Length: 419
Ligand SMILES: Cc1ncc(COP(=O)(O)O)c(CN[C@@H]2CONC2=O)c1O
Image 1 (tube, rainbow, N blue to C red):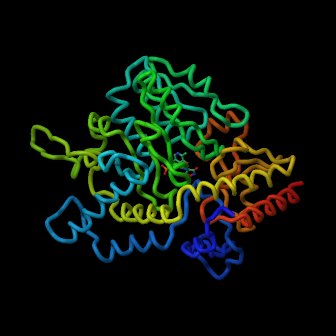
Image 2 (cartoon, rainbow, N blue to C red):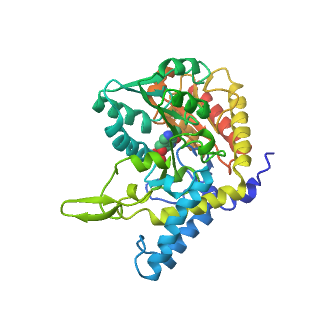
């Protein structure tokens, strides 16, 4: 037991009672559904508790309005909720205040925001960006495109056979021409937890910036961006019990202050004249147009929920489930598991010999087990692993060992089918 009252938590997620297996062309349950759902695809997106949906419903029913302090009451109420959502996120991740919290659409947009502002104005020809073989396309492709534009070089730190980052290789690749070191906090494919504070220190020794991809970390463990000392840190609401359509870029205030805006237009300006425009204060300078207001309300409720449960307890629960899944899968000699056994995030990527991940996940779906099969937006990493795809089971605070047993049984059924 990990101290979580999982049964009580599951009561807050109606979707977990879904029966599936019937007609998938019409969204939602139908009378042909006959199989219980075992949802093990949380690294793709997490489910949404009643409390988050109810908070967003209350917004739409009670104080829906456009923000930026229109004179009328509803706008004031919506503006306060939207602005205070930034304070809530700042406190949750250990930022100094709302000035360091920019709401984006998702993690991917957060990386693009930095590439289009810092990258196009600060990255010089001949400099380099050091990233790793295990990065998600959200950062990896962003740095590739930026460095091509700027005449800079992308360097990829290697991983060892256990899926750990080769820190000696990292140290050898960071030099005085390194402008940015960009690393994932928890790999969404390997489960590897990277030493991002140490990596940030190495970056800073060479006057390089450190950007940490926290999409798989913030939902699953306590994160303190101040302790990490990252210059930028990004994550998504949909992976942490929140709605889709909202992500977060954390940035040190002095860095964000010095950057030009990303998207321009309404709300992010202070004064516009025919001759030009000046910009709003942080973080509003980076939030052009009508923002994700209901999503910000939902994200606040998601953080309330997570803090009620406790991030340390969630981390313990997830690593316990990951260890259980790892050890049960490791019982079979025809299964290859990717990533380290120790100290891994709440997910396990694997392959069953002679069965393509897509075929395996389809059979798992027949048994109600929802996992992700494919490259998990880490195609270069799969090239390093030497496989075209992998099957990934990923856990969260509402998952149980029994669901992992269902996974193992369904894998066994697939094994018999393809034997
Ligand atoms: C480590 C990591 N970085 C970046 C992203 C991109 O987040 P957004 O899609 O919200 O911009 C994800 C999302 N995880 C993906 C989403 O689907 N399957 C995954 O593993 C991720 O896990």
